[in-house]
Image (tube, rainbow, N blue to C red):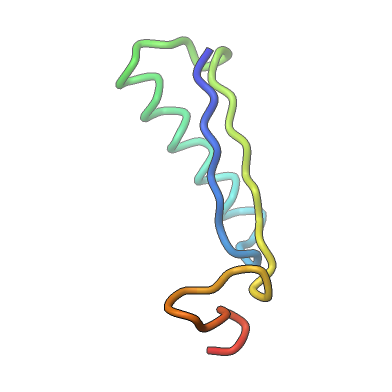
Length: 61
């Protein structure tokens, strides 16, 4: 039972998240030969205020 967690900044559309889930599921099925119903995808969205790189928050860019 593969479980994949995707962490990303908020702001993607439902259509983009749906496509992401479909494509990640297909990649896991192909790579580890798991049935699609055994693949779980968790999307964790982060506020741009809660993510920083090189000392700069994403919300400040």
